[in-house]
Amino acid sequence: MTTISPLATLLAAQQTDPTSTPPFQLVDEHGDLTAAGREVGVDLDLAKDLHADMVLARRLDQEGLALQRQGELHLWLMAWGQEAAQVGSVRALQLSDRVFPSYREHAVALCRGISPADIMRQWRGVAHSGWDPAESNVHINSLVLGTQTLHATGYATGVRLDRSDEVVMTYFGDGAASQGDVNEAFNWAAAGGLPVVFFCQNNQWAISTPTATQMRTPLHVRAAGFGLAGYHVDGNDVLAVHAVTQHAVARVRAGEGPALIEAQTYRLAGHSSSDDPKRYRTDDELAGWQAKDPIVRLERLLRSSGVDDTYFDELQAREEAFAAEVREQCKTLHGDDLAVVFDHTYAEPHPVMESERAQHVARRDRTVA
Image (cartoon, rainbow, N blue to C red; front, side, top):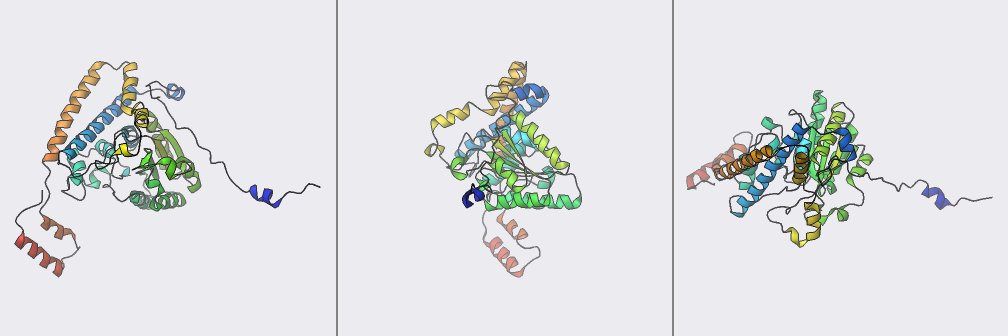
């Protein structure tokens, strides 16, 4: 008689195959359509709009870093290389859908009509936040790592209670995925069947920590463990990002539960203007990802699809005018007198606060600019 060992019996309960899927792609890094791309086809008008959005977003980034180096901004967080992930996803939403960003979603803000001045206001140090969320349906930047995912989940709970068809989108990076807040948000959203899409821009580095060191299981695989619909997309392929996000958002809007999208991308610059990426990554790695540049990729597709030089010449002129506008708007930003701080400290007037305000006003001799 064959005897089954207790160990073999126990091993039957072990799950060891979290299956990863390759990132979905419509346009390869050479600008050629993949098999899926040929099947889906290309909407050239959409492709041109997305391309223009990415070009302007990158120019804002370039100007922002230059302004920081000139002392006009105190800090700047770069998103070079991540334009496709941001533009493709936010353009798949309805304007009534609410967005909760981290601190790097400049392209998202531009696509929602937020001015360069309002994007830079916080980084110039003249305000705690740059814009009114009610005007753009984009929440203010969240600087605490991952906290915006909880804000989004809480807001999505309100959407559910209001019986609205609104979808909530929140952005975070691969580093933030290791935070407790983010994992709690995944669980709350899944358990409540909330209308939220979690969009991870996996740019391969959590400041100086590579993704391989952060996690042993890809994020899109972990989605199923929380009860989220998981998607894996080439984050440098703007058309693929747009298509995948559009599908995920439609599913969430139809009441089928929350989703998580992992977009494989790369930040070509440092984590911020204070970071030196040469200290932790190689030139060969950078060159490999530069070859996958999302803007160059889409330009190649547009040109091979018959878009002539007139479009590109007009876009270049528009880009230069936009750059001048960014510089001008930045240098005209000035802060309020510090006395306004007392207006927002308490909901109602407070005797100690009034005394401190009077002391401040009595001795001030300048305003902060």
